[in-house]
Amino acid sequence: MGSTDYKQPLYATRIDLPAETRAQIIGLLNQTLAFTLDLKTQVKQAHWNVKGLDFYQLHELFDELASELEEFVDLVAERVTALGGLALGTARVAAQVSELPEYPFDILDGKDHVVALADRYAIYAKLVRQGIAKTDDLGDADTADLYTEVSRAIDKRLWFLEAHLQASVVASSNGAAGTTEKATAEKTSAKAK
Ligand SMILES: [Fe+2]
Image 1 (cartoon, rainbow, N blue to C red):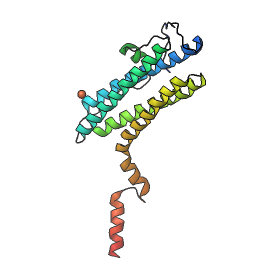
Image 2 (tube, helix red, strand yellow):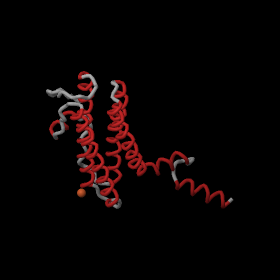
Image 3 (cartoon, rainbow, N blue to C red):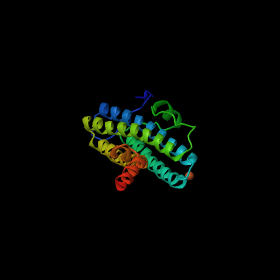
């Protein structure tokens, strides 16, 4: 995981979580913040540059995903400050801390953008799910709940993205030979007999 070794002040608060616990949760949340900011900019990259026959629906879908991630950015950053931490949410910090692979600049077609985003959503979904368990173990049910909310939404978005890719996989895993052409050919020859 990326480094969050910035000098992080811990402000006094009346929240009844020990300072050491708060510091650990703040570190985790700031790491999540960096990943979320990075993912949001990558989704925007897809929103602007996607081309092909599905252009319009993907252009719109990607914008919806980016807006949702912007909400999570705020949710995560404000949990950091609520716990007495310093939210580290600049583009420079995000680039340094996030471990998402850089978005490919040489793709155009809608399917390639959907694959690129699904790959990155999967990494992010795993990070967020780990956040639920970690903050639960640290005794912070509220941050665990925040992670759960984000996790459920991200799983749903991963479904939205993967649904664009699954039709051909289903066809090939159901069919004897994996192609519609061969199935049709078999039906035709059966009829001929
Ligand atoms: Fe736009």
